[in-house]
Figure 1 (cartoon, rainbow, N blue to C red):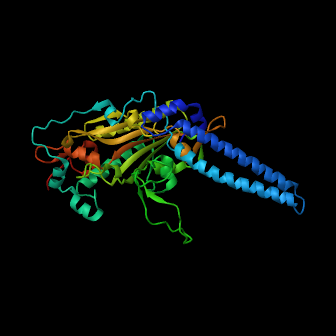
Figure 2: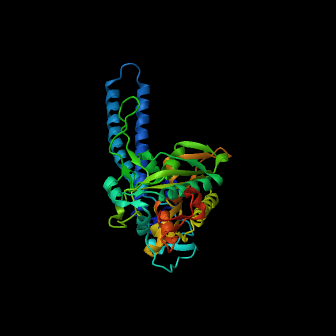
Figure 3: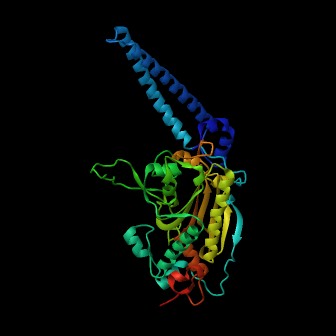
Length: 435
């Protein structure tokens, strides 16, 4: 969410950003509603002042005229309060749509087809034997059980088994150890969160949860508090550790000397995948739950500092893909594929031989103060002024797609799979092979 004063001063730039990001928003309509909202608030304040002045004049029993005047003021306040509530709701519905203006170096494009590759490393393998996809490899070595996964968990359910377990957990530990060595604070955050966490981090399309639009699971049951009463707040499962980490300092004011803050969170992730009906229905390329190590940074309100942190996090992702010994590339996301709150975004993609294409393995985004305004995370600078922090996030490693990439890219002619050197200590062997 942006500051309304900034929106008033930069209406044309924001309207342009809305068009580029394909957001249905009329900034002029928002400003008209904002003007009406302020006018109503002024009128209500004036009437409240009159009511207080009238009360101050009353000494003892009020006169008939004073009673009549008081009722008139009260009725008028009630009428305006109702109008104000309606206008405020309209205002809030539009404010949540307001996009942040993308960075100057963000490519202009209509959709994901116009994202731009800016870096590539590793050779795409050319097998001199009939290669297999990861499902065939997993069946040979009993690494996955999809049939029983679906039986137990439903659509997109799966079990990871045998040598794939230390391989996946090894990836997670390797990512955590690398980030800890680089100064990131390790955290295992809550995966069960309240509504403000997902609204604040921008995981709702609007101002509240919409099951038809939001890729989020809501819990049906309500929490029982320590005193036995029912907590009426809504609870949700996170799709990444990002929201929980961003909300860690919600409604707090930090000290400038403590910035930047750098966190790495390890968590289970849950996604309803409501917008992916009919896509990747077989296997574990697109699933409802997986493991992930996430990076989150909070910086001063400085484009330069946030850009440096953005590149630092991307550097970690590159190192991790190098450590996995798989071909990968980095792409910059164009305006038409950039969500409302993002100032700049890069994705990491690994080569998936069976798809003969790249598969997204991570995403790095800079939101500037768009999220921190929603979550109310500020810092006090050296002059004592309070400013909103800038917030950034990036995937270090997720569990499923890198697993696919390792099994397929590092497969050997005899049917075994070479384990990346960085992960061999977790499996106590150099290959996944038939027992």
